[in-house]
Length: 72
Image: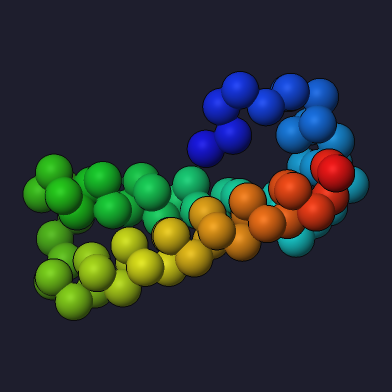
């Protein structure tokens, strides 16, 4: 998600900002669940999958805003 960003900046955010760290891990968890559902490994209905995708996107958007705010 933060490809091309300095690893030192990301490490500092993880260390210094528990909200950022928690949201990042939540996004990663949702990403894995969505992928598993799309591969058929995780049996869920389409409504739940759509909700998870929206939640994942909202987390990504929030992380991007936090990253920009905290690093610039």
